[in-house]
Image 1 (cartoon, helix red, strand yellow):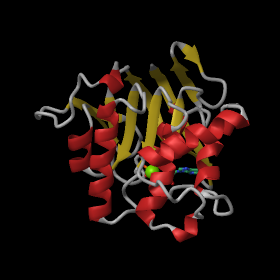
Image 2 (cartoon, protein in one colour):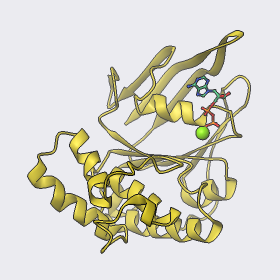
Image 3 (cartoon, protein in one colour):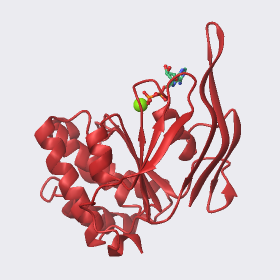
Length: 236
Ligand code: ADP
Ligand code: MG
């Protein structure tokens, strides 16, 4: 579905170019949930943004379904660590933004947004503003906004790390149930996290980024019996 080949990324710094990613080769296949695990500063967010086409690589390519990206990846939608909601828009308007960006006509947006809001557990909060919601509810809006477009690959950048432990645990569990139910047809997931337990519980394959320079240090399949049903209809 998604492939990075020889991907490098440097940022211009005071002392010249700062290499963040050097020579990353990574494939995300249909049906997979992949974790990108690494310490703070190891380049997880940069790699995720490159895969989503939000940041251009310095060299190498990112391809979606075999086609090299030239801009935002049409097959991905992103959930951000700090939610990235627009404070002047209601819950429903925030969720509809995802659809608007994909050119879905206004008449079809409301129906899809309301369904996503209901499925993510925010029924009754359509007209609320982000500041009226708890952190956990705000991130639910973030999930609804990404899932409503039914992306081939759902990208999540530390989506639980701004939430308290209990809220995060509840939301993780609910999301895994939603994926298994097949109500959001997402074909693959990339989860950025620095939480090893989260990676083991939620994903099939863990890609560990080494720090300095940003390379893939190790990749391994999650060896434990998985709580998620790998044959779930969400991953057909
Ligand atoms: P992680 O998500 O693993 O914490 P990041 O991808 O955010 O890592 O950052 C990796 C490195 O790149 C860090 O040293 C960070 O300071 C630097 N960096 C990230 N984004 C930028 C940017 N837009 N401009 C300059 N440096 C950046
Ligand atoms: Mg990050």
